[in-house]
Figure (cartoon, one colour):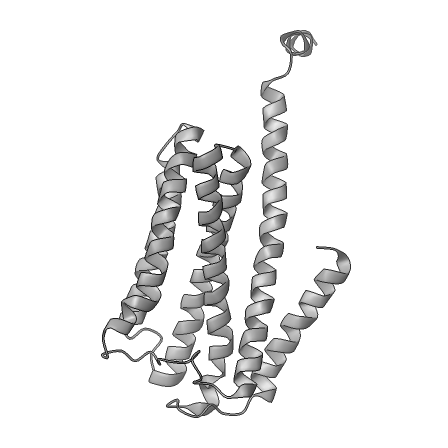
Length: 231
């Protein structure tokens, strides 16, 4: 992303944040309508988390198919960003819960499910750290990423919607918001997904460069290494 793109992204995020706090009216249908503005920050975090999860799984499948190190790096970086955005989803959800229901954590089924999902994502890195062989790390990580993709919609949508015993509002994205809220919410989704893409590309480029440098160091000719040692 060039300088103009970064400035445009910053302006988009700034405008969305300002509009979310100052322009949006109280949201009808919530216990505390004036404090429901948090939804336009909470939902975009979850959408960016989904995007990161899908990209991580896509490159995990590519790695299992082609066995190229670049695909493992792309998958791992996206998985890490997915964990960050799922964490932000949890934090903004807790702030919304405090505003609407008086406590940051109510042990609602939705909150319990997102906590389980965070553990699923954290376990990915624990699994990779438990294996020394880089190829086995990549293979196990790729297989686990597929499992995480299946777990994400189940834990964040299917399970919470399987019971009416939940504080979490339903149908928010299916016509449950006014046009003003929908505009800011989906603009926020665009802004955070673009932020994810920018962060992912920067980190992937850095890690691929680091991998290439370390690989060249391991494949230096023996005579060159001997000369370096004699010096």
